[in-house]
Image 1 (cartoon, rainbow, N blue to C red):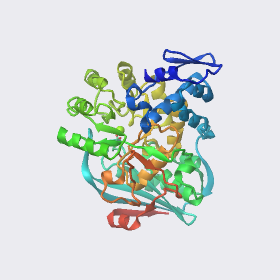
Image 2: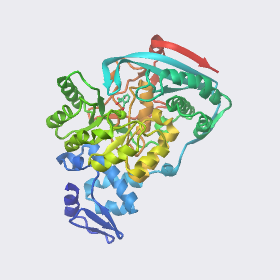
Image 3: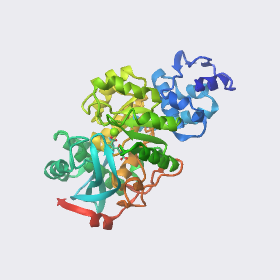
Image 4: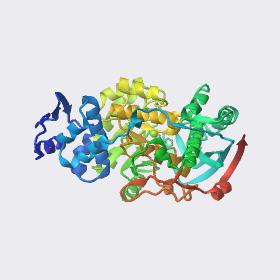
Length: 476
Ligand code: OSB
Ligand code: MG
């Protein structure tokens, strides 16, 4: 494998405790660190060791996992690697102590009012997944006020219970009747305080997350920090990919792919379903042999489709996302044991415990993290930390958020463990006009800048929000 070759050729003098060898291993302090990079499709390409960012990041996760599994100090692995890769290890050595921390301790905040608001945004193009098609997005905004400041969050539930059981309607009911009163009952003494007030109410994680997001934006503004800073983010730019819906015909999909690659997006994710899979993905791979390509089935298959799904195993995909049921871990583990491509779970990962169980039984090798799906920053940070400690890559998923939810996703994806491109596209990928300014932009290198201003780091466009509001309600 390319890395082994390069490692063996390195001209560095040998460190006394590290022996580089020709085979796929480095001996470090009596441990053997196998150089089996979990992303062969990335390391085998010529581009891998150039300055292409996604590959560096894949490598970074891999190095982290080597240090973690072998308990080899990063410095030792650093010495064993050729020069080109040492920056990866330098980052690892600078990992701050937040890794062991769960939750964030904050000053008590007196939340006085909670506004919930439904805003309809037309989509530029219809978006189709295995569970349905939409042509506008009903955005659910939450604005909490207190200490003379506002904090904004977004509830990512959809209008219909298709991606998950939550809907805009259920979230409105649960926030209005249970969560908001719990939040308003006394000053909120921290994220842990808020989550423990929400815990007695089962499920409804998107509703809970909406309030957590708004609260954290308020706290970040009150303490003049960006959300990224507040949660311990380390990235100034985040790599992004694009999720492409099911199209009426292959030609249209191929056109879209060209379009987003030309804009710089670092990874293409194709939505698949029975009938829009093995006739489509191989053709995309044939035309784009080197791109980072993944597929997302949104639970459209069962284990009986395993032979069918194995066709995808030949295509050097970065991952297959949520092929089986949203509730399932066990069948995914069976499928993962039979195919080489990494499975990634989205719908199935609803909490830290589920994530740990999934990893323990081998249901997946990658996790898509969505702050809404897991109930907020608190649980998302915990899952992130657990994955980081195990060397499991995570990436930030999306739910067709407005700029407000998108800004929260950017903050989350600035954490160290988000080593794969997220579904955080430019505002203009979905909307003609967004609810924030400046709108989210994707640079030509396929990255989004992490803003440094207080809170979300974007201005909220009240006028545009007001002109598109279908319903608004104040709870105090
Ligand atoms: O499964 O990741 C998903 C959109 C809505 C619901 C579920 C998903 C998606 C996407 C689009 O894939 C992600 C985005 O660009 O926001
Ligand atoms: Mg998904």
